[in-house]
Image (cartoon, rainbow, N blue to C red; front, side, top):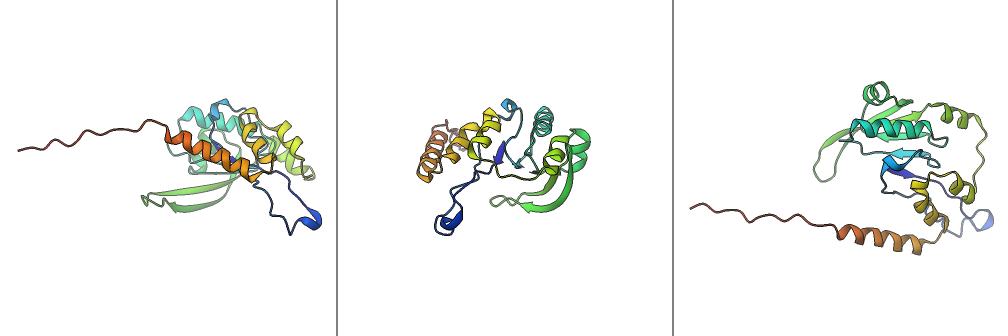
Length: 182
């Protein structure tokens, strides 16, 4: 599952002089381990090929989230809302194509309408502190959020390099050489 989150940054007179630290992170985690998407406001899913039980679990995580406002995915309302019980309304759909293969999909942008999202929208939006964000976050996402809260681009870059190196260690498939006839 991927998600983006907000972490506060330097303001006031220094704001134009100091670039903000990263305030969005993509995390790789087992979505089945999450109970909510708190503290994220946007949830992105490349959900082509997700099994039905994962859709049902993600719908439950969204209902448990007070911060989730938007969902971007690749399935229409008939499946997402009617079949899997997502509480959201379609805002926009857009035809897309994948860069390498040219494979086409339709992206759907939804606004969350579950009870916790409606309650959060009715409250005045106070900008949370980093400590509040970390306290309210689901434990599955906390590690990545702690990296963002450090506001140290070097530490974040080192973490990304470590993750990429770990991906390189995965076993590679080997192919048999073709059999030549004749």
